[in-house]
Image 1 (cartoon, rainbow, N blue to C red):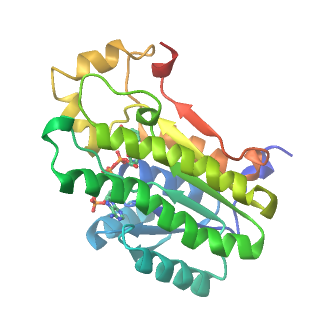
Image 2 (cartoon, rainbow, N blue to C red; image 1 turned 45 degrees about the horizontal axis):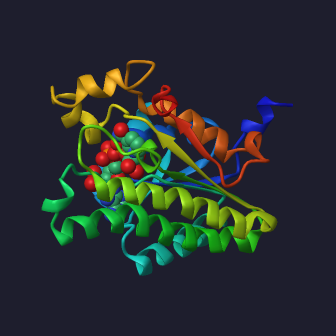
Length: 256
Ligand code: NDP
């Protein structure tokens, strides 16, 4: 009874930024559960490398070139995917970027870019794919937030990133409340530092990394599959009573 709830055969899942790292791990987890997976990436080469990586594991994935900051393109991609596959059941809003810049030195463009990809992009995707899910009366959306939407990270300055992720968390709750009685669940995952391209520079920085480890009760960073397994749980019926949750996956970081 319980394991059956993880069966995603006949489901269609879209993962933004699904070509590498956390997004790719999510794509793999959903594919392993039987879903038809579409990787939506801004860079076709990254999408192709994600597709190749899944193929090497025996999973087929489709790819679509998509910049999540362009609402017209996002709407068109959602329509195309539903026209091609007949449905969309799962959306993972994973695309995101981060920079470390003191607030007083930040250029307007940098602030706008981070908010545009990390927050506006999540809204455009939730709205476009959510419309199809509402029309069919079911769906599960998982937004990748961050513990940075709950605490201000130390010691690196990243006010735009933190604000964008706090926005993702409350956007998640807002959409969850609006759509709960129409069959569409919306949850978020709030990871700690995960070893990816995004965190590599910080892990190599002796001014950052020892502090990160010291502040984490488990004294380690996470790996992409440790986020993907939670995304899989939120995507499937095992989490059927959950909507509007921000699931913190942080090795205990926010305990202190
Ligand atoms: P990566 O940088 O490795 O991957 C992010 C992906 O998003 C890339 O493939 C990137 O494509 C894609 N992307 C960027 N901009 C756009 C866009 N406009 N449209 C579509 N795709 C885009 O990051 P991570 O795997 O580390 O992070 C994934 C998510 O997890 C992000 O939302 C991040 O904020 C969040 N997160 C990460 C943590 C970490 O420690 N790594 C911690 C907490 C949260 P391209 O390579 O072509 O730019």
